[in-house]
Image (cartoon, rainbow, N blue to C red):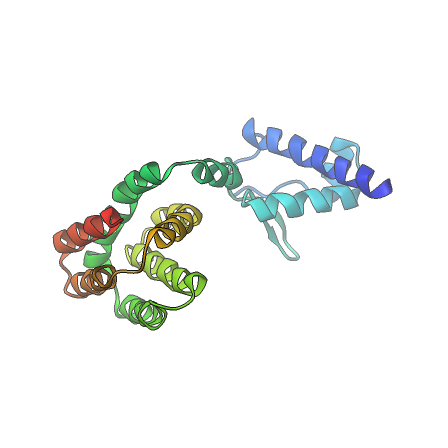
Length: 216
């Protein structure tokens, strides 16, 4: 029973803090009140505040800096966005990839660095090695490859959005693999996309990305 009560208090504290964040009580980047201050304001113990801050840090709303305090990282809970993404259909996921991934890959072809190419070649080697192997391992390498492509655009907002979107992409990959065997043209498209990025050809990179996204 004490554990149930404690968990309930933490949940209540998390909800109150989320409401304050939503109301704009603190600006993004601002240092939050200390644990004793929040405990006094909310009428709860410091331990409960500490647990609540851990929850908010895990969700991406708060950044806890050891020895410095807690800072507001975002005013919208990223977990809510993840939940919304998880409810979209395969067709909706494909539409989102066209808008987000293809355009990001076009930017990557212009902005990529030598370090980006090294990471991409390593991820592609993993895809090739496990193309006919265990599905989870293959999908893990595939997600790394696509994340590296988006990261090569050097736009933190795009990278973060795509990172949240990866869960939906993984689900789509699992679905497509259950429908039939893996096809060589899919692997070839990955290689061609990397070649277009390496050759700094954004239009070709975007066109190949759209072709890959439309693959069943």
